[in-house]
Length: 235
Image 1 (cartoon, rainbow, N blue to C red):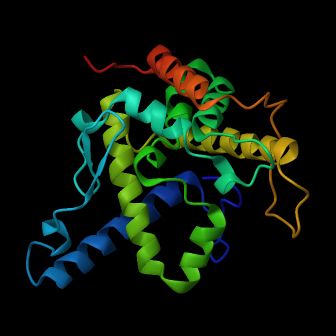
Image 2 (image 1 turned 120 degrees about the vertical axis):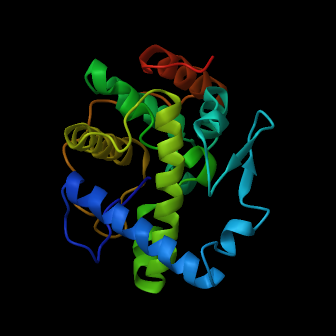
Image 3 (image 1 turned 60 degrees about the vertical axis):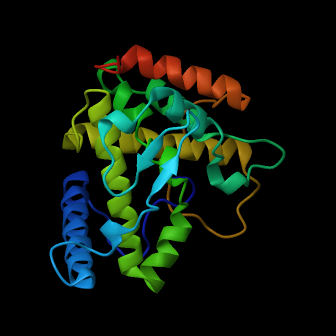
């Protein structure tokens, strides 16, 4: 998620507090779904079009994703074609895939797979900017909770596919989030126009981000980085 990542109406949370909040949101969504369906099964659960088609021609079920639905080539191509900052980098495109590789390579070896897949859910759900989520907090908190639930489900399937714990241990999540924020600060410094209004406070930027990669190079580098650091690889 690019740009302002904090939700303005909520206080700062530790990773452990954030995970607990996500679980509470997940429970709220399930209760609303059951109520809407009038019983144990939600009407949402019976909707036939809650899956997305991937670049490989597979189906990824947004409500009940499984690790078997996750393919590294899909992750690589999808993320390589999604721009950071909703494309607001003048005259260039910085892809989520390139950002993910940048984050991974800035972490210790044992954390790199977690850093690479930190935005993996965006391969199936797109990149929701922080300001959009902030606005949803004001206008439709339950809709925001639904988005978070979809992200949690996708992330769980992605991490399981590559042998990673979900949710990540608190210390790992904190380290990844810190580097992710520093990568954001580096991209803001190197590629965005001067800010028209004050941003949220950002940490010290990482060193030079480098030149933007074409989507095909970003896909290849993401794939190879994932293959190098993932504890498990799909057969």
